[in-house]
Length: 391
Image 1 (cartoon, rainbow, N blue to C red):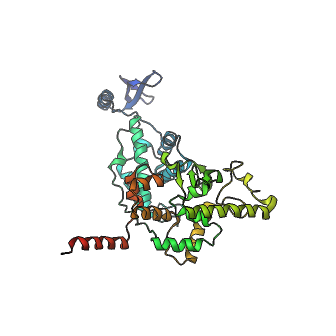
Image 2: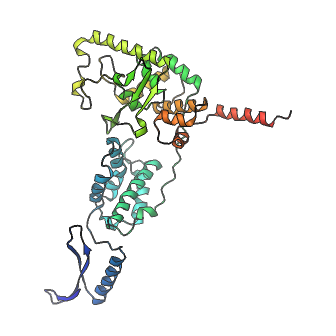
Image 3: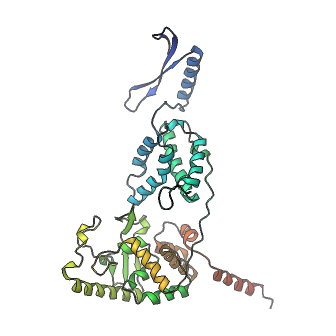
């Protein structure tokens, strides 16, 4: 496999041509390398034969990090929701910015360490001041996705090992969720009772996600049977509104409605009929221009012209309403945390709370969505006092 060759200037080189197996098409695969010294060629031949025998040989390639990530994302995102695809692409964007033009096989542990340091100090490109640092959570998401991509490259024989595994992710401690007490929920709903979208705010405090509330159609609600079915979500993906399936199989669920919510939904239905009479031909006139809209769907949460409200407007309106109620500020998504926490504190079994939320696992519900407040700790104090009391 080693031939002595003489090039045009009369100097001698040693060319190595060695078989490394067969490709998927059955054709023989070879590696050709040229060396200045015979011992270098022999050493490389021995290395290649040994690695080929134990299945660890990686054929040299000029494929860049960016090119490989393109290939990886094709398979990694196949069949996934559009929001998940965007999440994957966004997570890997810092890698493209920093290492995208580098050969995949040239990346070292030091390169990944530098990537993390860059992200934490000056890697922000959007969602804040450009050039400022990203949070530890963003860096962890990027490392996690890059580790999966490099692991795939190892499995494909593109890399000898996954250097991302050697890098310690930055420490991230999720901020404690702010949730309302039962009294705060009642105060908010008292203020919301005078709002046109009173029913929507009740739905958000019923444990539904924003996208689930905004994705509800009247066909999904049975006021006589007092139930609603979550069949879809209307979400914001890359600044565009889209219709998506529920986040998981358990996300598609039917929930019973309490009398107050049935009354609020009935009032909203009548209000929309009145809006239609007032608006005339302009009612729902703008729906056909929406790329996500299916003709015939009647959405529950709309404006006075029958157009489904924008997700960001809905979140902002929630903030404006709680300000008018002079309540402690929480995010719209924290209303879901509030509902599930209060259900658990009221004695609803966590298995039921989990099914209500559309989760796949009760342990996840307990860990992520059930929160204890300072007032809850006082309950522990009272319990221990009863236990320790000497008769």
